Amino acid sequence: MFGLDGRIALVTGAGQGVGAGIARALAARGAVVAVNDLERERATAVETEIAAQGGRARRAIFDVTDYDAVAAGIRAIEGDLGPIDVLVNNAGVPAGMDVRKFLDTEPDQWRRYVDLNLYGVMNCCRATVGGMSERGWGRVITISSGAGTIGMSFGVSPYAAGKGGAISFMRHLALETAASGVTANTVAIGLIDNQLDPSVTAGLAKTIPTGRLGKPDDVAALCVYLASPEASWMTGQTINLNGGNPTS
Image (cartoon, rainbow, N blue to C red; front, side, top):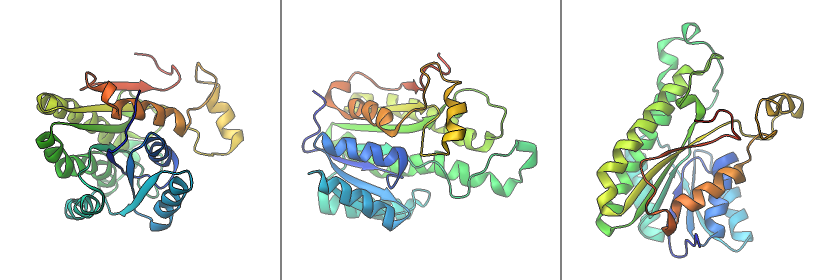
């Protein structure tokens, strides 16, 4: 079950953290993975790691917020590897992201969050989903956040606006493409341990019913399922993956 042999997958923002975990997991199930990142060194490191584990990967350096760069990057991937079957929209944290309440922000600080988390998703979908529909098979998975599904008071509202917009977009895309064999789902993740200071993470973990932060492998395992043939009847859903905090 959940085999991906022969499938071509693109994972955006895959040079580190959750994206790298997803790329490794898809490759382990047989997919050939295009590892997208803005930083060549990060993407190359993940590409090399996958190859060392017996998988196949190719780095793909482009900015998902630039549609022309996305289209050119995807043409290059498909020229080398073949048509993209699985798209994982994972890129979502802009460089220099900080936590600041909305009234303490300026308008010129909002756009980067919406550009990356909404337009980045739309750009990649526009460049890949048409081909998936023509071939009669495809999987689109967008990594969102609990910030896009519930209100939070500590200062992530522009980021949440982008995440919430992508959730809504994916629901509509799913219904537009369901008859063509393409599924589109969102994973709204909770607090993830990205090798933060243990003195900080210990306190955060206490707020989660399971008693721990999430790991990239937790997200990757769900993505393997959503990318697989067995997930053909799962579409248009927003799945909360958060250790039970909160439930819905």
